[in-house]
Image (cartoon, rainbow, N blue to C red; front, top):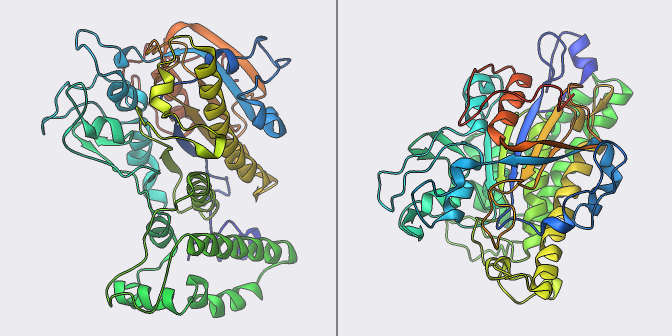
Length: 431
């Protein structure tokens, strides 16, 4: 099992976790996608700079506002029709991390571009067990027509390894957990996993003896850090177990891999998986599609029985716009939980969030107009001290979001002259 950085081991020459050979802490990048845009009146702060007030949708971020950069003015021109007609939801998600126009097809000849997360993963991902991690909450589709003649592959994927090959997100918490924390030994066969689940055995049962020996080599601070980490892994494992029904009557080669019925619980499990993956340096690049664009999920927990997509076509009906804002805030509450977890997780002399860059946003602004300019975008974290957060900034109208991605790539050690439809970088905006 991978471990977080433990300085007392590094100083003894043993080495562990997230520290590089130079002793510098690694940087991480994550990209979070939410569907159907936002009620922008309740999203956009009135004031610029550091003296802004968080509007109602962003209020859940108040405890971490000093780590939040609200970015107004960014656009995705390639999500616009540009002669291709309807299909804004498919283009919104396909373009979000690629900055490229998706070929309009419902066949196998899909084509868009390589996404920023995969560019970073290809250039910098060989330092970790997993080049990147892709997560989601909706069962994906990779074929068929989903939006006005566009392939479902565009609508259900935001990560693209090549212009023609999306990277489908893992939507089942158990599968994602096993991928990140199992060692691939003989006990990790399908039958052994099923037996372990039936017997309520934890993955930690297989490393406890090693953990005890390791603990004896650690200083008191690292002992506490190791204990907190292992406790977090077990807590996450228990919460996943609570979403599963495991009985002794399972077929020999089956394995519980269900989807949590509670959407909020599902989202937080995925966020916790990303926190632990960053903490133990399993990966430094992650993407998470909370729901596919065009999702018509209802939110009965919020007292909303209407579908999200239907509501986004609000026709300026104030009641519908209020419901959209409630959904937007619910999504933000889950995201704020993720950012707080990163801020509470210690690394070096600071927090895991200090070394991270977390993009949160949508490829659509106002869902009623299918607008692809002035997008709702947040950048959280300090990028290793290279980002001045705690501000609301506004860039020139229609500035490509790809320009932001070039800045992030620079900070991840990946230097390109262009990405997607970029026109340059964002000098002086982030720092």
